[in-house]
Length: 291
Figure (tube, rainbow, N blue to C red):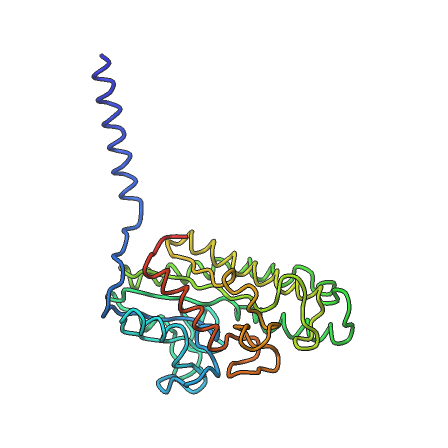
């Protein structure tokens, strides 16, 4: 009787394993040299003003030929199709042409695409633009305390959370078009320090620098969570960039301040920032996992 009971238990275990295998998404093989890599995303992927310019990009995209997609592709020997574009929103990745010569970025995907990076979300609802503009405006009038936080409260974080299903749907669409691709969602690096600002280099008070930092970390959290929910790997570029924000001196910072001191757009990654992102993305592709 005991032997029969053990047999039943083994059979149940085998059935459960089989069901789990059917329900779990099939793992894709690691990328190898020659595989096709499609880069999707906004200016933090495109790398505006980081020399040299990508001459293949539509003029409005101001894309760099030394952004992390180009550097990752060179490092791993992948065949790159870079569709990242400055100012892109998630809708410009999935459904809506950003410019007449920049159709939805997903049109670059095929069933043979093996690697996809997605860096998006900061422009949805104009979040980054509005946060920076709002805080500089309020803090320039009252350069002490937390006037921006006092004025806008949870407005920006609420918008980010409302946008979460849009991010998730974009990841799902990538899987549908490129079912064997590894998908990596790349987060945003630290723009301001966690423990204070650098007024007037970035004209936001110390208190509101923490407020802005909290908005950015909330966006990264949403990107991480949507990655987990939709079978993608989240690439954290925030923690590795702490201490390299826009308030640091040239040679230390990976993000430029309001008036850039190096070739990069305002409050965007410079060449060193792109190299740091390259290291994070390359490591993730070499050792993929669902975060």
